Length: 270
Image (cartoon, rainbow, N blue to C red; front, side, top):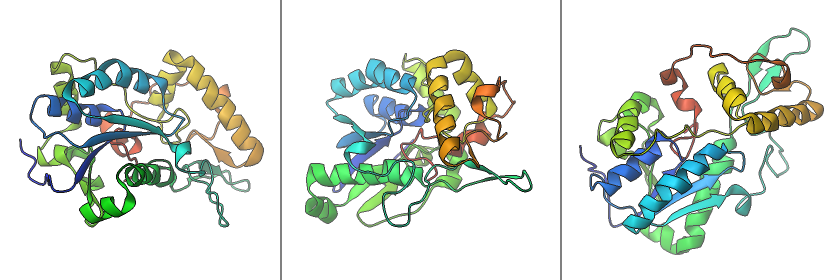
């Protein structure tokens, strides 16, 4: 297992989503199987599941402190005014909600722009603020993303100031192998990283939140009520039934089908 694209001459920043792959990279760093980055950054969308932050505080932050690596958890609202919509003249809804056609009842899905506005832009602004934009531009930034070979379709070849690199792909690791790496290190299985109101959840994810995280499920129900009050055609769940009237059950969707729907890498939909 090697990481040949590591470039120590540039600023190396691990972009953490707080999920499986991000945590596996941090464990691999602690084992000397990956080099130390200059910094780890996680962007809090301010709608993240609380168990993700619990795991970071209890297991990952102490590991980073022991290695002498700074881990910054930043709030998106510190760096952007974008929230459900963009704050400019061409106001655009950012999350990929479902749309119910009033005439036909057909359900379609909007494209998702929340990752760019909620994660990528705050991440980049934080690095520019920390290092100085001129210095960061001159030196260049290597952004480590925790994508594995079973989701290789998400790999994008980049360059310039913000160069994306994929250590886990270079090491030929799968998501399941990352889970094993974390567990073999003596840590609990990490939770998946995703917002509690994310429309990309499948019914098994909603069922888990309804059963095991009732407070956050209640927030999602209230969120959708407010969403429908403003935009009557929008829904959070693919069935288009309001969350509060459903009892969810596992729909049998395999985790491999859900890989690109979550933010474990620090940047979803990338």
